[in-house]
Image 1: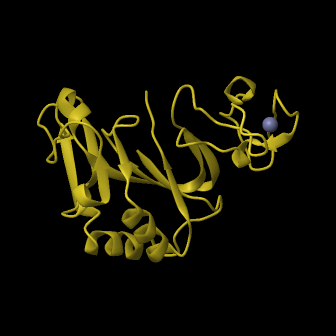
Image 2: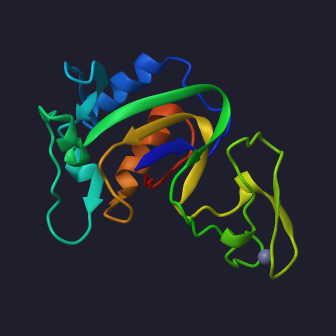
Length: 189
Ligand SMILES: [Zn+2]
């Protein structure tokens, strides 16, 4: 699950101040760093905060998430932790393999008309709606939690598509700490 601002150019003026606010409100917990000797790999991130399970609503049965770093890297598929990713320029962050994006004019599904977005730049790629023929920039489609664009992403690992939803409380928390409107999407490998 990935949170991003609806403003393509948004990056916090002060990332540590933003993170400190989100830690104070209990969305994000303490930072951690785990070194895997066999893989000579280091994983960094933040544990989930004490209010996390009130800010995200899990659907269906109780969530099978680990909240502390597992010793084996192979067990990390259930480890729910938070990573911050920020970029010099806006980029497309792939979410679902088949995002159910729709035309903002007639609401028809336009997934089949999506261009290759790996080299996406703002204002560069238009999508033509197969139903109403309206052309819309890829970033202005209704992405319906299937992918996102921007420079600053809060990545919550190990929450799988449609397994959980963000509460209004979390969305207004993100708004109040940044002055921006936010949305989120699911991602899969
Ligand atoms: Zn349309």
